[in-house]
Length: 338
Image: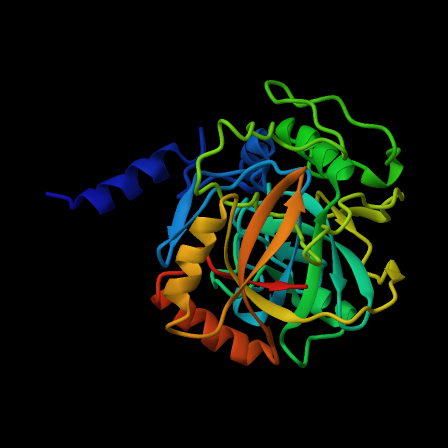
């Protein structure tokens, strides 16, 4: 009696001339399958909410995303592996991993310590650390000037017009849409089944004060620079330079411009509330760990009370302090740059 494996080989041999026999699809078949869902070059992905170390992250199309924090970079250990949306990670291209932004999307990253700015393609999830806002490729870190240091204080801004164009094309299986040729001043048509967004609009309507629960957190992705204002969300219009590389649009790996460096400090924001009493409650809890203060800020016409620790001298000190704040009950705490 023949073993099943031997029997299968004999059957394949007997049919080889007529139809052929293999353990997997031919290169042509793989190309065809990849083109169906763009698996050879990745695909458009938002993803479901997920939890890391007790923190729930909710991916979403946030066309107003603008946040500060600490960036890191990842390289050789992931080079050549698949990203969260199925693309191949190349540490020598200008890409990045973000916890919640759509994949792919384009963001402008500014190193707040030296003023360098670059545009990168978000095509992966991460970094899975409370103390990091973005994980850049090695090339991105080189261009921003922090490869050797390992981290940098950054501002991350989504390029709304360009990212929406990427999303619309990717939904149709086109990952190599020519972003360089679009007019950055003109809003794109809304993707099927989604609201129409422009730079000046919020991704969702703000609830009225009567509808806002007392513990309402300040909207995520809003970079606050002081107690009375927020960083302008508007990104200067420009044509993004880039090209089709391996079936994907990738921005040109270069420093697009250099901004004047302004003094910036590291803080831990433990929470932000629309009701002062809620902020005071968290402050009282965290004062057992370290000294905190409450700083008011206005976002979209509403006042929020931020519970902060800082300024903090270094990233290492901020990481250690963040861990203590979380252990003391500041579950939503994060590192920000003001």
